[in-house]
Length: 121
Image (tube, rainbow, N blue to C red):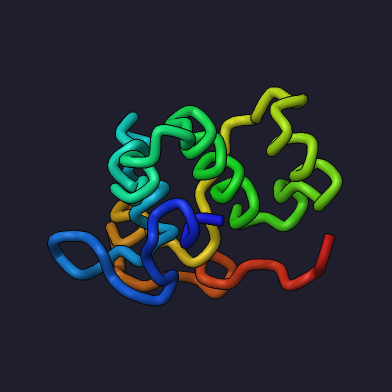
């Protein structure tokens, strides 16, 4: 969903330092209240597209990539979220995203910080 709304591939690096992938960039922009910067310009130029819907898709996309698999919504919940029938919970940090605070101290990460649960929902 993040790839569709942003027009960017998930495996590239998109910040000034070349350290944030698409998920990391979306998370950072959302925390800063600037998620609208992630929306592809082509979507904004079309009069039939709605910025609120695009921001909702970014929010839902971040919910789907949370670090803990229990926090990720199942597909029936995602459908309700996309239809606007549900209030969206605040996303927690996404999987595969290392915040700079994690690098303080001995400059090493524990395995459970880097790897997400692989159980489907």
